[in-house]
Image 1 (cartoon, helix red, strand yellow):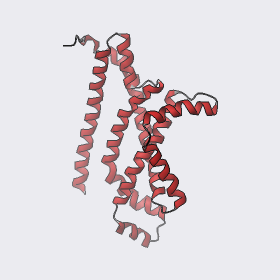
Image 2: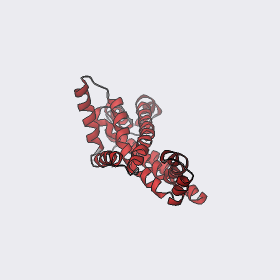
Image 3: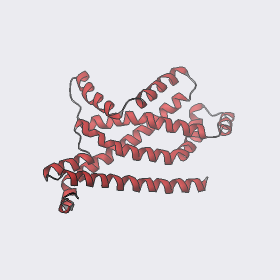
Image 4: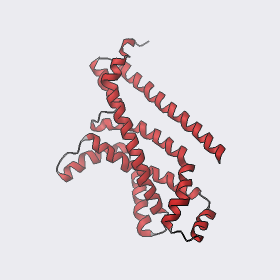
Length: 222
């Protein structure tokens, strides 16, 4: 049995060490989710446009990003960009940019599948009404694609929240960093990492349960 010090778990610990990291992790998740969906939708539309000068660069970007580990992208951006521009950009800003760029590739594939799930008859109906490609996407295809892919988008967001722990590689103060620092300060690393594991599990399991309920409601509506 491990000699665990249960007094380590206190409200004071949360306020002094954990809250700051939790706020940053949530902010990073939300910014990367919104930015990733926006840029991912653009990439998906480029790939489905049928125009090689749009589809080829978008395909290369998506396949390239999906073939590289996220932690490598984080390190490359954090180390190489300041070297190229001649000044540091900070761990937090670097994390926001990197996660948005990386997640756009994954959200792009989700949105592409959602767009392709819309009946071709509705696409042809929009074209018969004289709608342009952009208008057809905006008013007919994308609203249905977002509804169809909403559970998958939220599931990817949960994975994104878990991946925010990788910013430890560049020293950003995220949720896991808060637990790590508290463990070092109180000389209780086992308790700190145990509490971190429980916290991530509770947050992610709760979100997964809500996504499952949402998926059931959407299935009933459809």
